[in-house]
Length: 79
Image (cartoon, rainbow, N blue to C red; front, side):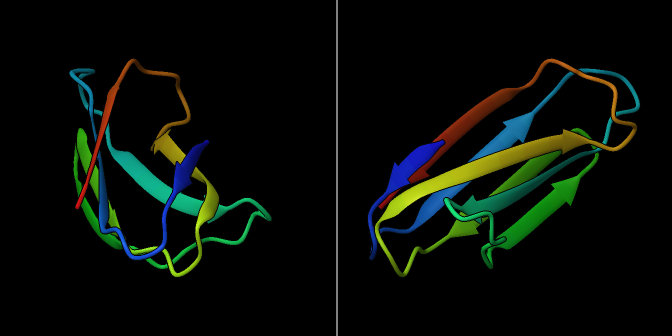
């Protein structure tokens, strides 16, 4: 869960070194509605760019294609 400010552009990036892994990422509002984001997905790398229209709490969900838990690093930046 993160608090985002309307008008700022955010990028969330995740990566893992687990073999044969495909990560995906989604951004949800605090009510559980999936937000529209620019997504980049390539095997063990995933990123989502997001410009919130409303300030508030959001959930960044990172998942792995097989459902097996894997370690990953999540980094975010904003402007």
